[in-house]
Length: 242
Image: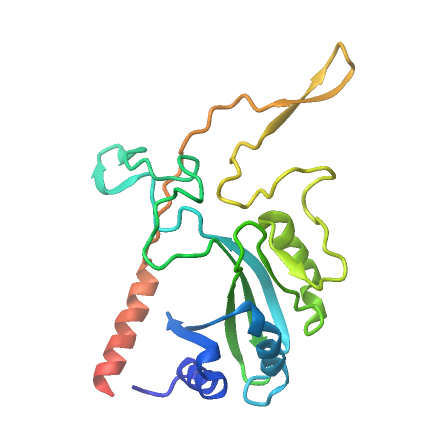
């Protein structure tokens, strides 16, 4: 196989960190899974050591794996009017985390993902950190290594409820004062918990329980687009020719 930048980076990561990182390369993108306890040491090395020099944090975001791998729509059978609706009965809202359908190998619910850029080496890396506790998801804050992740971590805390230990000012950044819950969690209702209206008798805006009935309107489908299929075919041809 030809030596591509992603293969080279994956090899350097493996040689430097060994079993500390679980490295994968998918669609020419390198992902390194690291335990929360090792995150700060690994991140410092990725920033400072010459073979890496990941000096620019592009993003920090959260992931909720509740319902991962499950579907509410039958996407294999297609009629003239489109996908059939709600036949699987496995979507979020029909079960709790404790009694969820369990995809093989998926043991923890929340993860924090860090996207890094090395300007010196013109390379990108994704760090994937699982939260050990599903009830109180927590990972170390990276603000001491990359101060620019401050607002990113606040956003992840606000939307997913992931606590970034050591953050200097961890508070909500997108939702309103007094907001209850974390709206990007899969068990948070898409229609919300409350609705507002103006009450002419009270002459003020009032909050009431939401009156909209939840419905599944959009299929959740993971698909390979044509450009990705072409890239995979080209990669297979390069492997065979070399």
